[in-house]
Length: 288
Ligand code: HEC
Ligand code: HEC
Image: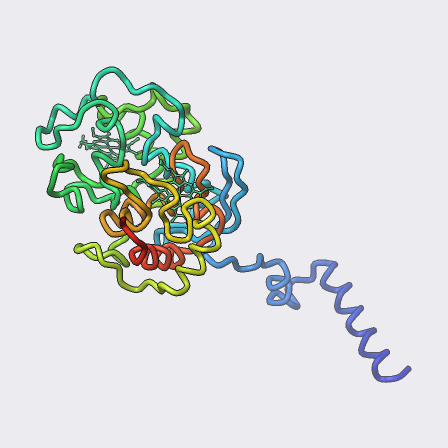
């Protein structure tokens, strides 16, 4: 027998030894082989359930918040924006019951039922952009949701916590769960990029142009003017929203537009940085 045959015999014998479960001899080895591959905590898989889009791997948007299982925390984002439009539900006849507990925001009807109207595009309520101006209600934001359990958040959604904050009559159970997942895992404090004066820091506009031209331009045009969200007299284009309300832009680009065939950038695998890059570029697009 030559040296290499002896060596392979030793390896085979060692293998048999291990298979027989002789773990006292080589505990470190057997532990190593059974160990699961280490998955980066920032990468989780999601499942789409509101629409048919297949998500790819995406980053969680809140540091250190990692769902145990494959949680879809993205689809609830469009419900936060406008669940009536997304779920094709008629606006309830009365204003949301909590609406009467404030007087500063004089809107009525549908707006009073949108999560964003009370809690803000920046998720900060009173402490954010809706802390002044016509949208001021004085209501708190929802960024503390990350520290609540799913059960606690569900109690907020189905009225058990506050009977005037009950959405269970309008949402299916599974839809409420999507909102809970969004609150728990999908919120992102945009202050990391968006300054109080609406300027954006830390975004790469040239990468933003590449991303915009590759996705958004197909529907919004290379100059962002193909779709007008306002009217003829007061047009609102991509450039307008990006400058006037970067938080709304951030939310819609991340999660999609309720009731429209607009993809969620997070769902198709964009990173938080990609969103910031496209916002930075979009602020350079024309507003008229
Ligand atoms: C009419 C305004 C209004 C609307 C619409 C509204 N909320 Fe609220 N929400 C409140 C108020 C006010 C509170 C605090 C109530 C209290 O303290 O009892 C609250 C509390 C919460 C909380 C608990 C926050 C915390 O830190 O304790 C969460 C989470 C929440 N809302 C999520 C949502 C979601 C999601 C939607 C949309 C489906 C929504 N809200 C729609 C007014 C609103
Ligand atoms: C498949 C087509 C499509 C693509 C791709 C698309 N959008 Fe949209 N987007 C729409 C439609 C449709 C609307 C709704 C227009 C309306 O309500 O008048 C919309 C609305 C918006 C709005 C909200 C305007 C408002 O005030 O309601 C923003 C912001 C926006 N898109 C940004 C983007 C960005 C950024 C991208 C690329 C990441 C993108 N969109 C990709 C179709 C698309």
